[in-house]
Amino acid sequence: MHFVFKPLLKTYFPKSTLLIDHFHVIRLINDRLNHTRKRIMRKYAQNKKSLEYRLLKHRYKILLKSGNYIDHEVFKYDKLLKHYVTENMILESLLSFDDELKQAYSAKEEYLIFDQVTKEEANNSDKRKEFNNVIKRFKHTQVEESISVAQILSSWKEEILNSFIWINNRRISNGPVEGKNNYIKKILSNANGMTNFQSARNRILYSQNKYETYSMNEHKNKIKRTGTPRGAYKKTKIVKTYK
Image (cartoon, rainbow, N blue to C red):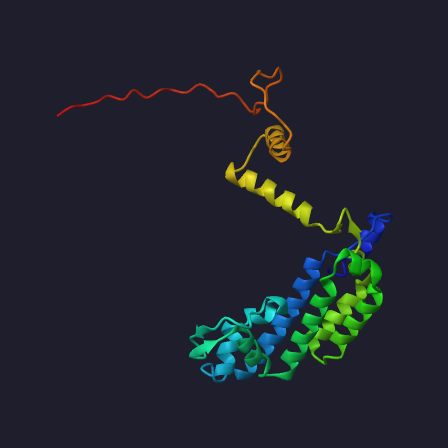
């Protein structure tokens, strides 16, 4: 989502539909929220034994977690609070430390609600209007990190809205491509690298095609690594001595 790539994409892919995967948007928002958390935590850095500092430092992952997955029922013993609490109780404690953190967290949750949409909801709702309201929500927080999020969302508005296009009952995403790339990396890693491109290509294509079968017949064209022939060498005779 760096601004440098935007003119390049329009220049080299003029007829393509550009979009930004929702995963990267959520990661951006979480990163900015985490920066807000760190800035507020530094206010309590003079007393690192204070409850505010320790909770902001060691329980911050709850802030980055989606509100839909925050547990409200299961009580677990917390070593920092020294009593049994739920995840939601820890979250409420974190948000009570500073109003800026509360505003930034609320804006993050509003975007997650906007992003979690079914195909029917995407077709029957005005996503552009909803997205504009989300951008305004980030601006009105008066939190510097959230305001920067609003600016980035505004500059990539069309690309983000394109990610709500559904094809074959799923949102357009580069997730499948990234999955293939990760699979190829694992093949190369398990082989400790492959110096023969043709052999590596055949292995990747064979493993990715679930309908492909193998043959016991020897191929006419063998794939061998090309290189300089080994030169002459002198064998060293090993003489065993017995005592």
